[in-house]
Image (tube, rainbow, N blue to C red; front, top):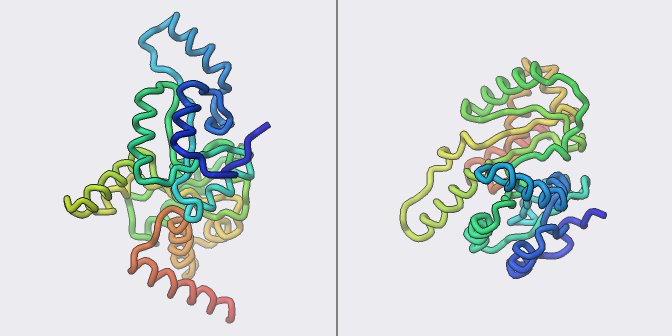
Length: 257
């Protein structure tokens, strides 16, 4: 029976207690990982056949802000997936230590990637849609570094999701700590290549943009979808928030015409 996601905060003490001694704990291992009993058997088998082979890793998803990452939490809950709450500043260093001491586990923030469990494997070819929407969004956002993907997500209400690779996020967190310690600021653009905007092919607004790519309103819709995805990932800058509010008003005005 899958554990309920985020029913209560899980302290680092509990993780310390469970992870080294009880790696099969449901509260830590997400359902898309390999089953624990098979993992142990495979690890033993691998040790016998090839001692130099890198061990398979189970993914432990974590949350740092239950409010800001609410969209991702909702997606996980709908699929009965698990995550742990790690909302202290020291946790970034803590999980790195855990990974170094436990070869069979890796930590990934809940918004670092979209797991296969969240996707609808309909088998439809989205190559053409990806190419078209990638061009539309890169042009509208004036951002050639942005990676755009198109997926069939099970939740049709979700139009766009922004993810940042775990490696890029940890580097970003480290730079923030340096900046807080007076060691210089951080250029957000240095992490732009690690960002991925995933568009939901099952969403009606995404379908509209795909079918009406030359419409004069499409660039505005593209910017809005990107900002909405960004808000679920991290706060907007002052300039971005100002533009977002104005654009929201412009979109509402369109409904009055």
